[in-house]
Image 1 (cartoon, rainbow, N blue to C red):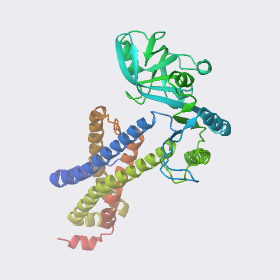
Image 2 (cartoon, rainbow, N blue to C red):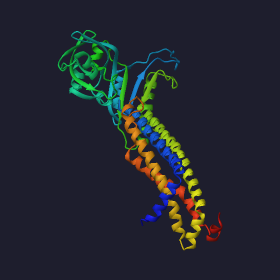
Image 3 (cartoon, one colour):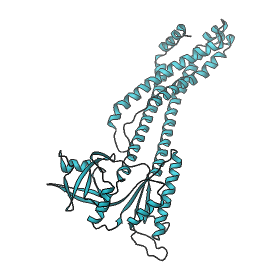
Image 4 (cartoon, rainbow, N blue to C red):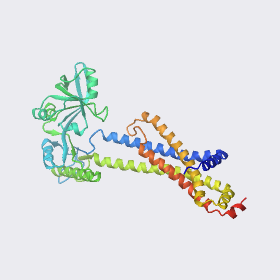
Length: 414
């Protein structure tokens, strides 16, 4: 029940001890402010890392080969391991039930692309149609390469948004001819990749056309897969690890590569890397909560000390109240209410300042690994509940002590 006399007593005590109350409230507000800022930047780190993984499919398996560094089964080191179309087709057939999307790749770095009097050097990649989904590329106009383009080795190209901007300016590129190292290709589409400028500086053409046009034969330079994901992250990671390991073992067995020769075969598993990064983010979040709560506890201890002083100062008053019949619960509520009020108001001020600062700073923070730090509604509610609980804890011990004061001893107190 609302008791106006009790509130008058609380405000009267605060008025009499303005500096003491201010300093106590400042410690609580600082603790909440620091906690909010730390949690906001943890969110920013999470956003930044997530944006990095959005560049490609999260469950991507990327395979490339190099040169052997060790002799194995009578074979000398220094052999270049070369993958072929037959390897790609064999793996596709063997792991058909596990594979979601697949592509072989034949990359040409620094490919000179010419349109009229405009020239640029871009990464040209021969690929299969599934590369669109593996790379998370979305079409802004036209279409992507398809199965028919692969079968007929069509001289068609899909260009990134940056390529369009630099070569075609404001002109519509669809249907226009571009020259790649002197060979003409018809532009059939423009894509946008969330990976940013580097990923949008690519040109995709059918891998069969790439191999024929640039003397690739039946060679491929890399393989890229995504696999069917389960809903449970741990199961998905275990599946992806098994798939990566089996794929790597198949290549090592076929080309007689030593098991510990890491440079000859490299299998990159983005899902496994993603789990490690997100586990690290969770650890950082835990550390931030620990530091923030530690700061709040320091403020709460300050509130508790102040309330002990208040109880000491009002010992005679409390004794008189009890002599006149005041119940222990009313004494507890009197002290507890003041502690909760000071803590909650101070904490809310710190919370508001923290959220306001994040609101101002957030649009300005947009780096690779920290993007738009903020605190969501649920976190703000949890922080508010922590405030109320902290206020109750800080006031309970002094309140309990006050309820145990004996009237006779209190009246003797000087």
